[in-house]
Image 1 (cartoon, one colour):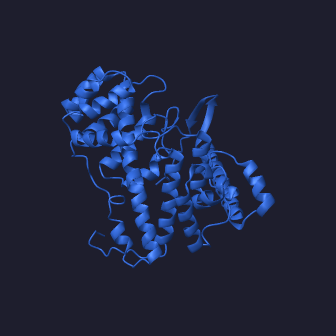
Image 2 (cartoon, one colour):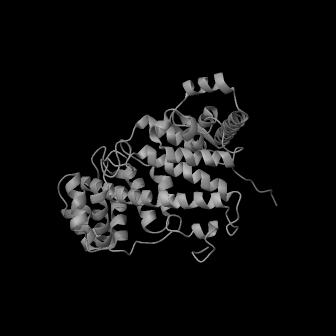
Image 3 (cartoon, helix red, strand yellow):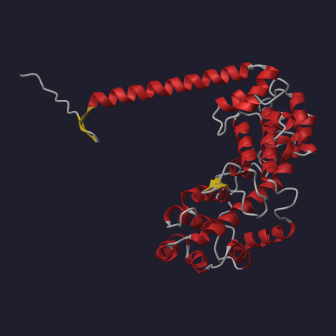
Length: 364
């Protein structure tokens, strides 16, 4: 698949910047920092793109529509007029949102790195693995969150962005951190950043991941930089609905979710529903949301659903699948316990010894 494919096919659009994996790890930090600095002057945490719940709904809703189109078209099969219009809107809307997410991940990881409590002890290893300029940058940065990320924008290390991001990733997993700062939780955030920089993730894949990321104290969108503060209940609700594959229904019918959407996204989701009526229901099926592993419980929403719609076939199937999974897990656990009891015996509380099976050969 390449940009030489016909422009009215999914093959062509899958090679565009949003969907293609591109390794940028060799790009100099200065080139990236210059772009981020320009972007920062025009974009802040109070503009129309800053609400994380809205951003997540745009991605998940439009991505759902792309999946439905992809289920009906082969990569080189021509798209009809509406499909092509939707695909073009997908790239137009989400490419700039991916830029914002990338810059946000880069700067919040830079800010968090200031809490490293073992920079002196780590310095030699960081020089060995990532080069002196990167190690020096992290060893010498001082100040609060804003001053540290501004230092990166004004005086970035003379190194590649790949080495810089991998150094942060390494620190989060290998350095010492005060309680509530850094550590493996931030390592997972840096994982997403590094995979995008190295071309393991496309921008689309990064966007699919970024809304789910959390640090030691909750979702990552609380840094007042490029994004406004999240609403915890709302973003968890959106992620729970997404897990069940019902974002279009949420955009169209859920009162809480509607607080975070604009008419343009509603229009697109209505068009998706009109063209795939058998795939998009008339309400969020909360039984399915819970059956597929929601973080929260939605008893009130379910009661309202029962009073209006009863239990849907999809909910019945989801509950049946959940029950089957639970039964399989219980049976597997029982079998493992039986196998353990057969091969081990307890000498005293807290101490077990593996049984030895003696195989006696037959006498000659």
